[in-house]
Length: 457
Image 1 (cartoon, rainbow, N blue to C red):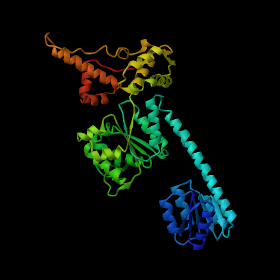
Image 2 (cartoon, rainbow, N blue to C red):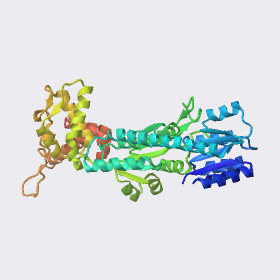
Image 3 (cartoon, rainbow, N blue to C red):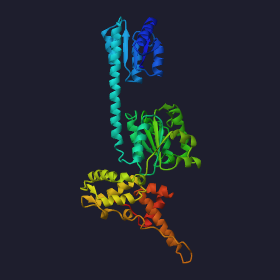
Image 4 (cartoon, one colour):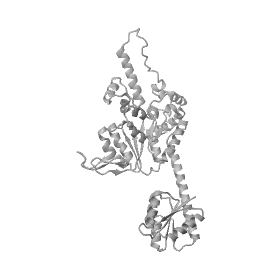
């Protein structure tokens, strides 16, 4: 049953519409006057609103504006005993679907209502179709047809329809940012900004100014005010990548923003309201960090309302062939190379490899191979040795002490293997490698130079 809100300051008119609408199968909601009508408009949703224009206090034009601001697809029919062409034109310009001058016949009322509801039905059906086509197109950017990817796409589609915060959990290189972008683009926030922020790439002393902004003169060097990322993402989505790297002493400030939906720029005395959806991502276990007091439990539950897991490449081997062919076309075009295909033996080799760096590593290997390739297809001779024989450099540690052991050489061999494997796992990314090994960038660069380890395409 369709619900129709009727707003009129005349009791007799309210009684007429209540009886008339009920007799024709509608559910009438009556508001006696503009102020009551405005309250009902702001608290409930309706299939149609019928409002008198000439009312004391809040008039019908104000009602019309409020309805359209809240739900542009809700039709509004205006009525008045003082019909003028100018008044009719104003209401139609503002979005009214019908205009009834008093006195009116029952047939005219019913015809106007049915026409407005029919137009609404068409609009909603077209909107639903556009959203479905848009969703399909966006999800197609997540390449693969394995069961784990089908499940991921289904979850993305469901999560995007809500407005709640999301935590994406997955290994490095599994496409967490792509997943976050898909959620944003399918959601109702897609007309607003998607702002990514890597929590592991920003110095701690810049977190507050980057996220919340600052006022002119707030500190030395603040020659003009700066808008923070929360304000830049207002109405849209803020993607907090590597959220578990968020400094512990700043986490309470993020928690307050999530609770109060407002920020306080540095140097300001007035909070500013923000409407932002948070999508966070991590390659660590937030629950373990909470357990070890490295991440606030209350913040974790605020962010982890819905958890989405991106599967590692080793768990979606069925997708390697289609992913490889997709990436080959993309990389070859970018580098103006003639490579168009990949030999079946190479795909089999790829399917046996564990891909610790996931899709990012696969893309890096393919780019390196395509740049060096002189033919039009990728063959076994084009592949790096560690892909063909991933176990060839396995370190054999002594199992007994019967023979003399050169401890320094054994430790150096082990260190070389760990550093090289981790460096290649992260496709030559020094920052991520150093973080994984829990050493400084300077220490990592020393070891890379010491063992002559490089990752060049």
